[in-house]
Amino acid sequence: MNTIDATAGMLIVGAGQAGVQAAEALRSGGYAGPVTLLGDEAHGPYHRPPLSKAWLAGEAEAAQLVMRSAEALARKGITLRSGVRVQSLDRAARRLRLADGSVLAYDGLVLATGARPRRLALPGADAIGVHLLRGRDDADALAAGLAACAERQAPVVVVGGGVIGLEVAATARKKGLAVTVLEAAPRLLGRMLAPALSDWFADLHRAHGVQLELGVALAAIETEQGRAVAVRASDGRCWPCGLVVVGIGVEASDELAAAAGLACERGIVVDDCARTEDPAIAAAGDCTVRRLADGSLLRLESVNNATEQGKCAAAALLGRPRPFAGTPWFWSDQYDRKLQIAGLMAGADLHVPRGDRQASSFSFWHFRAGRLLAVDTVNAAREHLLARKLLDAGRSPTPEQAADTGFDLNTLLASASIAAPVSGNLS
Ligand code: FAD
Image 1 (cartoon, rainbow, N blue to C red):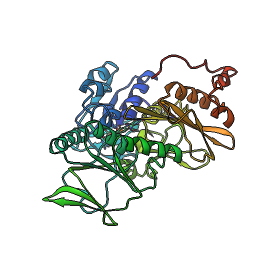
Image 2: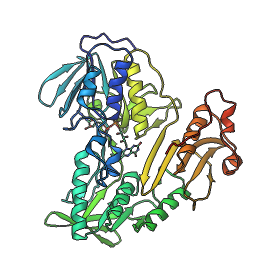
Image 3: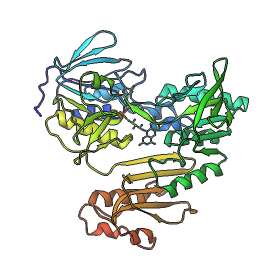
Image 4: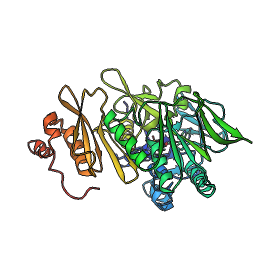
């Protein structure tokens, strides 16, 4: 990749986690030309994870959502333009056209356009009272809807037993609302967790009073005067509701890239250095899908992925490509439990529990052919960090060592030069 000359500067489309990281990494990487962050939301960059947790529960201040203020970005020489939608991309001319008709030239471009929630393809899916959750405006509308349900003592139906649906269910239960979760698959968090941990989460939600229905095929959302009043399954069962929250996954916002002829397969295809096939364009975060060395495609939707790929995108445009480093990680908060995932468990042939699932904290260690692939911890932040260090260092306990709580896993790092044992309060 050629080093970009600084006349038109760097443009970043999408002022979210990946976009902000890319902008800041361009600066910290020594880029001296103009850097402009373009975002179509009215708000400046903010953290999304609290939207289904503390913010939705009314337990966070607006200031805690702010990722970077326009002033903080300006101090780094980054121009933030909010409320600006990029309409099209002309790769030959290296230009972006904005929704207001204006045109911006670029030397280097980062696409960090994120993802949008998938909609239900059912009658009634667009009724009043059917909520999706991606942005701050969605969260505020949902919070108002939950407050109205609390006032009318109307039940909440969550469609989708994935992370977003379950976090919203937990928050709604905290507010004392009656909650039903409807999941099409036979278990919760099925794409993410081993069956035993899925079952543990199902028990957790039931213990908190959630009505959980698994293996449900939905037929329609019933409406009265345009408002959702019940969710009906194809077997005739019906759950009355004051509102419906749909959390059935996301679709990458890759239309800008696709229309400009960049390869897209359920996301903008990038290599492990966040490069597209156009040397002037990198892409990062939820809008991407990563081509791995074996040709397969990896899609990750997490703060960690957006952060790391944002940095990779900047490095690529600076002519110093570097691959995505480190073990992927993720977290989710439900009630007083923090699930943390280190690594990717796809392909695991052995899931080893460590610690007692009835206790306040425990973990699951996932292996393939005896090698550690991933670790899921519940309320065990120190073990999560230790697992990341082991995976980063390519160290693997044996399944027997992982199962034995008397075995000090730190000793596996002792001979690795990369890390000191994990200690201290890391919750
Ligand atoms: P985004 O943050 O979505 O930013 C993309 C931005 O680009 C958006 O503002 C979008 O409006 C804008 N945009 C799109 N198209 C255009 C255009 N044409 N012109 C201008 N702007 C455009 N991850 C975790 O790891 N842990 C969690 O606990 C967790 N909780 C979450 C809770 C919720 C409710 C949500 C929604 C997500 C959560 N995530 C969590 C996921 C995490 O927030 C995302 O993976 C991360 O925000 C992705 O960052 P991004 O920059 O790729 O995309």
